[in-house]
Each structure stands twice: as structure tokens, then as C-alpha cells.
Image 1 (spheres, rainbow, N blue to C red):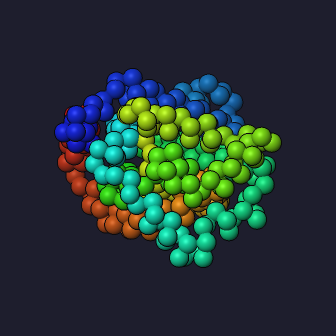
Image 2: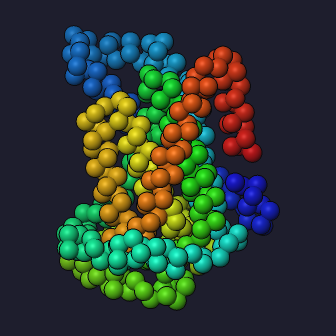
Image 3: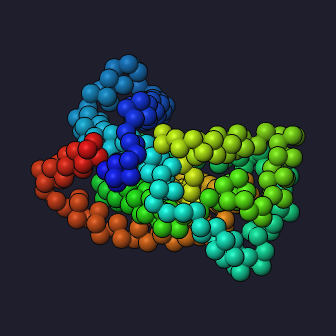
Length: 331
């Protein structure tokens, strides 16, 4: 990604962004490790908790998981800042010209704008505020979900399938398709294109914010400012089609359902919440989420035989491939 940006005269490499993102993943991993060890203490209730914890941390299996998963976690941490730089540079590769197509598609599918169909259910300030909290909670899926699948799963094939899908979703859905079908989404339509089609929705969101905080509004304003300043840092960039919020939520649901039925049910409920929130909070058209769901499912399906190939490779071959991937990401 960085090499592609360099051809357009953009430097997407900011050490502080990459190191800061890696620190977030390390902190997330630390919190998750404390939770896992605490669960073990509660389950086994040993006479000597300190000795028990030390035996768990020093065990061969625990150390092997860290040694196997941490290099891949570093690669995952590198991906997000590079993706942000690429996303903020979409206008260098394509013009934001697809919004009218997605607006027409939404109206053809639903008979009207999708947000209007949600308004009788979601159009209450307290509901809008709660949806904005859930939309930001998506970061938990990105950080905790990736840290978990890098380190903790015992099912090596599931781990490989998640990671293959994760990188493919960000690359294909989050970069290639975002550039190909460049669009800004309802909340940015007026300031960036001059189209005021979604002014009624934005008016409602700002009105609701007077009663309960709608946490996405300051973020949208900041994203717009960064876009206008050509900022290519972490968490910058504007892109509607397809929705990476929906894609990542669905990937996590597909993966965690293989481990826990209860966690899977909660994850699928979160997918539905994010899908609704993405439309109601004016970030996306409904078709952005539909395309993301279909593409994520296709990638997840293709990743299954690929993950078997990875798991069945000799250990030294896999380690060489992993080392090559880390070197490529660093470059």
C-alpha cells in the first residue's frame, strides 16, 4: 500500500502512527491475558494463586502461543495505519462519483432512502445515542478480536482462516473496492459534493444531539477536516462503499461462532446493530453493508481451503512464509 501511495507522491509512513497502533494492540493483549488468567483462577481456585499463575505463564503451550502469534499481531498492527493512509488518498486514484448510483440502488431496493424506513424504530434521540456508542464499540472487534485470533485459539485452521480473511477483507473490500467505487456516504455528501439529499437526516442527528450525545458527529466533523487538509494519518480517510464496519463485524461473528455458540449469537446481534447504525448515523447507504456482507462471506468461503493448506505445510515452510509476510509489510 505504501509503495502505491509513493507513486502518487504521498508518504503514508508515520512511525508514531504505526508504533501507537502497535501499543494499542499490546495493551489490548495484556488486558485479554489478565482476563484469561483470571478466568483460570476462578475455574481452578488453586491453593497458591501466584504459583498457579506462574505455572500457566511459564508453560510451554502458553509461551508457544505467544511466540507463534505475536509476529502476526505486529503485521496486523501495521495494516491499519497503512489502510488509513490509502483510504485518505482515494481522491488521488478516483473521483467520488458513485454516490448517485448507491442512492438510486437504495431507493430501488427499499422504495425510498433506507434511513427513512429505520426512522420509526431508531429515530428517537436515546436510541440514536446508544447506536452511536455501539458504532464506536466496533473498535473492540478490530483490536480485541484480532489479538484473540492471533494468540489464543487452539484451532490452528480457524486461526489461519481468520487471518487470511482479515487481510483479504482490508485489501479487497477496504482498498480495492473503495477506490473502484469511490463514494463519500450520506454525512459527507453535502460538504464534499454539494448534494443536499441527506440534509433531513443530518438535521435529525444534530437535533437528537441536543438531547443525548450522538458521539459520531464530532468524529464526522474531524474526518471531514482531515480530508480537506489532505491528512493521511491513522484513522483518517472517507469511504462509503463497501462498509468495513459491517465487514469486520461479520468476519468476527463468522469466526467466534466456531468457538462459542453464545458468543456467536452476541456477535451476530452486533452485526445487525452495526448494519442499522451505519445507515441511521449517516455513514453508509444500506447497499454498502449488503455488498460488504456478500464479499466477506465470499472471502471467508475461499479462505477455508487456503487455511488448510497453511496448516498442513511443514513448520519451517510456514515460518518462512510468515517471516516473508512480516518483511513485506515492513517494506
